[in-house]
Image 1 (spheres, rainbow, N blue to C red):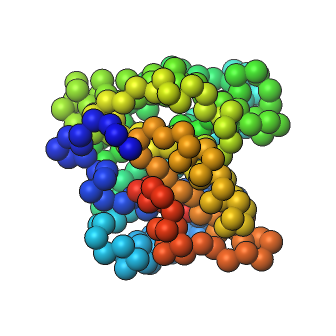
Image 2: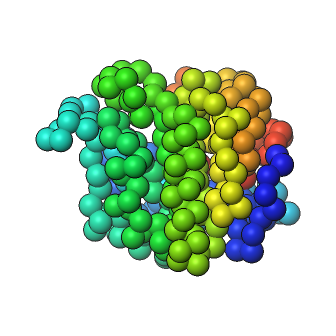
Image 3: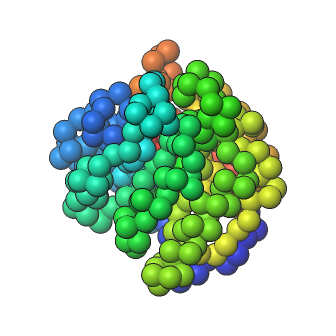
Length: 268
């Protein structure tokens, strides 16, 4: 994908990021919270080794991807249908990341809130050079529906806001470029992709987040990522949902046959 040349200190495309996703308060949201931290980090080490073996030409950068704002099934006191994780919880996961020289991604499920309301309170973490951002259109409920009752959406305007927020931090704090991960597994989840503005200070990853048998995942990647290129691409693997109907989990070698080869890999 054409875009601005990577600035010094950029992670992509020189490295491939392999991330573990979830939240330590839940065993159901992903591998990050499903097993004890030391076991989880050891398992991440093994995945990193598998990816390094599958593609020796691209060094692997480990990461933890924490859902820092979690969509909820009830409105809550402020009617926003989301819970913000405490600073102490974020610090705890950041500490785990430091043990592995891993990046930390903070993921936001805004529900009835907005990126404008949620991002500023996370800036003290995003000011750190090894902390990056994920935004999840699935739980951005512009029509004010209950999160999870239907798939939400972001427009290019929202993604441009998040990108500008990060680029301002990079500029004002003299940081290396940030990575911005945008989840996607349907076309309407992200509208007007052609209007997403690229900035060398922010590396945008459109991340194929759907689960199912390998053929369905490959179709989704083709239809929603390849056909609507933005900048870099990601691919998600679900230890449970991908395999629950008896399908094997896709291997690094299988994922690397995709065009373009994803540079951000997430395990849930």
